Length: 199
Ligand code: 5GP
Image 1 (cartoon, helix red, strand yellow):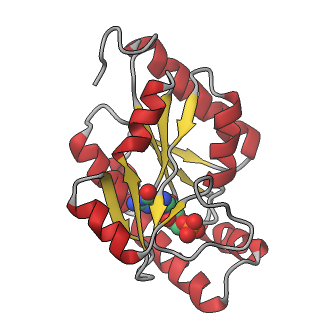
Image 2: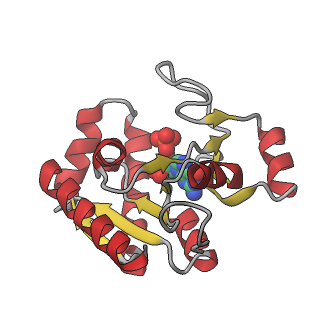
């Protein structure tokens, strides 16, 4: 993966996954600001409808299903998956990884387990981190506190989380988000160590 001379430091793909309610989105935005190696967050494409507070091209590229399919067929995705059995597709565009590389940072992908497993197959040196909560009870509470989803969606996400947890050991690191600052610090240590070894 490393291309000497292409960037000031070697290039890596960083993958963060974890159940919704694990706090991974907050962690990701902290990492964008605080990481010792610049992390450029990949903007995913999705067929899910845009939420009121979301901006196209900033939070996601919101694509019509046929446009998503067209891009998938022409090989524009690094990975893609139907997430949470909602019928909606999500995927990482290769152009997003190129954008990060071009900017001299590492690409940061916040994606589900299925997508992450596909990335691992293609990029064995990807830095993969699974973020989780100390207990399922706490995790369910966080989902409810968010207040953005109805009961059916919460139940489906809990179910997804239980099945995703089984894949935690496929990741190179598992970080328990028991306390936000501590968890962010732990991931920053992982990144620093990786930068020392690879670059
Ligand atoms: P939401 O619809 O709440 O924004 O995201 C739902 C889930 O989609 C999150 O758990 C997130 O990890 C996953 N996701 C977001 N972007 C991608 C992507 O590009 N690929 C895959 N495989 N999953 C994604």
